[in-house]
Image: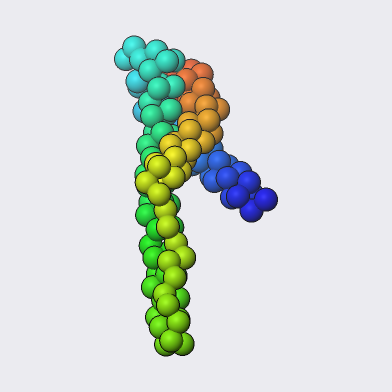
Length: 132
């Protein structure tokens, strides 16, 4: 339940970030389209941005999770040694799981980026340049 909620919040955050980027870069999109960029080019640009957000978010999320897990293992081991008990490795992240988490973050970001990318592609260049 918590994971689904976190995933939903993260997806909405990505959508919001990309929609705001589109609103702030209307003029840039208008210039690109006026210079001959196709809807597909603009869509690809924002889709790539969503993928990059997923890649960096996934990487830093895995790294932060690993650091927190290592800190918990370290703290627990110190406590157990003080109690004359053997240390226990609480946190273990196999490489395939870390890579899967990063890939999943990229996939979720790309799915969340579909709407903003298509919205950017639909911008009329004349309208985008007129109101800036």
